Length: 448
Image (tube, rainbow, N blue to C red; front, side, top):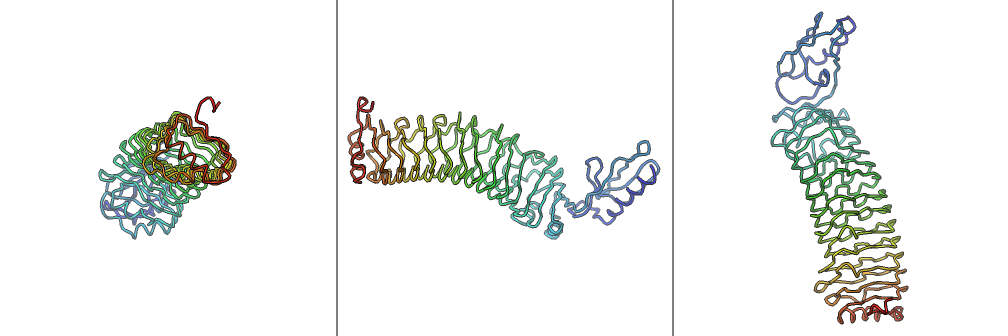
C-alpha cells in the first residue's frame, strides 16, 4: 500500500472513532466499501491490509491488491436505523438540520413514525440506501415532507409493504421514476401518493407491481405542473376507486389509458376534474362497465374537444355535472355506455357551449324514480340536435329545465320513446318561448 493511499484512508476513518459501537440507531458517518456501508473503530493500516471493527464489533480486513486498496470513501450525516426502538426525535432533528436525509438500515413502524407526517420538513433531498423493512412494516406512507425536492431509493426492500398512500403527499419533487424499491406483491393502495405535488412534472410507474391495488383515488390530485405520465405495464384489473385520480392536473394535455383493464372500477368521481389543458384521453379497450358514479368526471376540462367512451362501456347512475364547463367540447360518443337507472343528470352538459349535437339513443338512458334532469343542457348555446330515441324519461323530475338557454335547439329525436317520455319532452320545450320552434321527431321516416 503506498503512502498516499494509506494517508487518505487514515484521514477518512479517523472521523469514525466516536461512532456508537453497540447495535442501535445513530446519526454519523459510514465507510462505503464497494457499496457496503459500515462504521469503523480500532483502525489498523498495515502494509498489505487494513483492519477495523464495525459498530457491532465485527472485525473486517481489507486486503490491498498490488499496491492498491479496495475503494474506500466516507459518507457523512447518515441516519442508520436499527430494528429496535433506539431511534429518537433528537437524531431526526440532526438530520433535518443538515438539509438532507441519507437513510440506511432497517425500518420498522417505530422508526417510520419518527420520520413521517411532516417531521422531516426542512430537508430538500432524501436518499434511501439499502433500507429494509421488518416483517411488521406494512405501510411506507404519509411522509408528507413539503420541502422535499428529490428522493431516490437504491436497493431497498420492503417485502411486506402493502400501502404507499400519501408517500410523497405535498412534496416539492419535480420528477419520480419507480425503481430501486421492492414492495409486496399484495400492494393494495396508491391513494394520494403524489397528491398536492405542485412542482411534479413527470412520473413513471412502469415496473410497479399493481395487480392487487384497489385504490388510485387522488393519485395525482392537484399536481398542477404535471405534463408527463407513464403507466406502461401497470395492472389495474383489481382497482375499484379512480376518484380524483387526475383531478387538478391543470398542465396535463394527454392521458393514455388504452389497454388498461379497469373492469372493477366503481367510482370515477372527478377523475379528470379541472384538467384545464387536457385535449386527449385515450380510452381504447378500457372497461368501465361497473362504474356506478361519474360525478364531475370531466368537470372544467376546458380544452377538451372530443370524448369517446364507446370502447370504455361506461356504466353510471350518477352523472352530476359530468361534463360541466367543457366549453370547447364538440363531440361526445356515448354509444355502448349504460345509463340504465340513472338517478341524476343535474347540469350534466351545462356550459358545453361548442356542442352542436348529442346522441343518447345507444346508451340505455333510462331514468330511475325521481331522477333529476335539472339544467342537463343548460347554456349549451350551440346545441341543435338531441337524440333521446329509445330513452325513458318517464320517472324523471324537473324535466322542464332540460334545455335552459339552448336557444339554437332545433330538433329532438324521440323515436321509440313511450308516451310519458314524449310528454316530458314536450313540457321541456314548452317551458321557454325560445324553444317554440323545436321539432320532436317520433318516427324513423321523419328523422330521415
